[in-house]
Image (tube, rainbow, N blue to C red):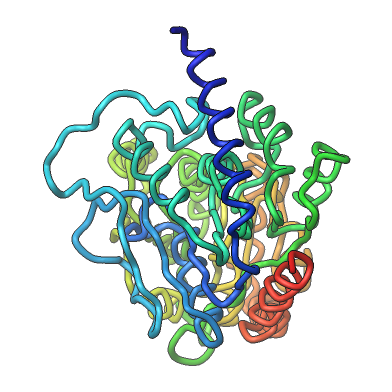
Length: 406
């Protein structure tokens, strides 16, 4: 039997099972919410925002964060009160990965984290759901939910990365399968328009944009007195810290009393450290690793730099804004251009233009009055993403889905 015929038989069996389940499915219940993550114990922005969303929803609902894999003993971020965290596959058991995944598309950026073991665990988890809401947080998981979710389960895909950044094969599967979802939520208007254009009449019944909420960080606004520029994020190519370091070499050449701190960890840390050495700027650049206290990091910042090649909705901008720290960012897809207003609460530069990034960093480094003005405006901008307000938008969405499906 060929792989194609096996897949066809599987789809036929799923459809038959769904027809049977639809006769017995209970009325939709939005009080039970499960949020599906790849690895809940990591330190990425998606994980942080999911924990924030779970905390908001837990005020009125029973919320569980379900992590496909467990690669660290404990969550990096504090688990919100009233929220449970569970794991489908515990990679701490020392067992090797088993074969290539057949459920997740090979072109998915995290494909190497999935295997046949996660396929079985994911399929079992999704098929055993009895009602409630399943929120997925990356394309591979959303595609799995669209294929496997039984009748009576409301499926909501929350996209954290822009549609335009996905590989063509993933985009093709999205166009073919996302119409089976109950709702699709983007973080930016630009991404919403991309999905509307791509999906057309095959879009889910509800396609909308809900941004992430401003996180609550301890302490008040930064005094903006330290001659320090801060960048925060996982050290991967997409975050563009190599571009930031090259820009910094230009900016600091005439401002030797300023420092750059790049806070985070990841696979490119050693390469970044070598680049700092090659550029001869080791005296002004520090790579302190990941931090659990982002508030304290930003308390010592006077400027926040974002040098990503692409983004979904960079939470670090909201974090900086909430501490009154102005932002200098590449106007990359997606997010920065919607979140900050050039000259008002930060500065935007053309994507990948290290010379322009150096120039705009230098502009703020030389002008304390502009830093103060933009920082005050940044505080006001952060209030547009108030957590209670964003939580209320999610509650309206879930309540509306429940009412429509009744």
